[in-house]
Length: 61
Image (cartoon, rainbow, N blue to C red; front, side, top):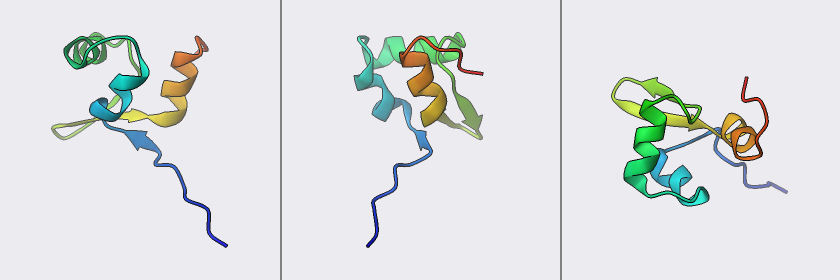
């Protein structure tokens, strides 16, 4: 029996609908360091666990 595993990271377009802001505001928040993120080359990835902790108001460290 195999259970579908959630991805470890999200793209900004996948994460943005989870917060009350538009995509442009979300990208600005990522650039300003308000949203936990990683830059891999030209790609931005949002670590799922840190993002969920951030949404819950917890320390994302």
